[in-house]
Image (tube, one colour):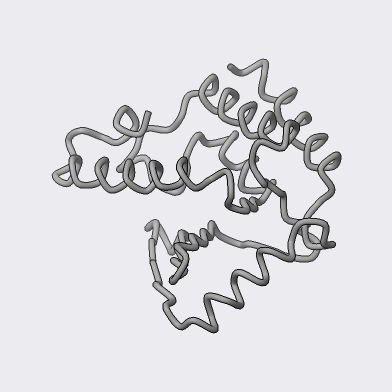
Length: 170
């Protein structure tokens, strides 16, 4: 699906698709053991725009039907406990941009996506200090069951509301 979304006319099309596929292949392979935390506000923005971080100059937006299908897959994973996936309680943790943390055992990638003026900015930081990596492990490991994430039932109810709102658009 990634290759279909990236604009083929980009001079770095092959490199971008290759790098993105490598990342998502790693993500799929490790995802059952990863803790995934997301923002319901960012999910709603995705449902509104069809964009996942990249501006329309780089990627075609997901269609309403694709957005709905992907959101239903996330909902199913949460409902069936297929993946450890939680929504932040945004009254306690506020993400004003898209942030990704990818823990690769001995390092943590901190990936920031944010809008500045009319540009989409991407920054990545590799944290390799063992104590910092351990602190991230400890923090994310403590999230399930904590007050920083919504209870499963609340998360499912919020996703169900989004699905109902957008089903007519697909």
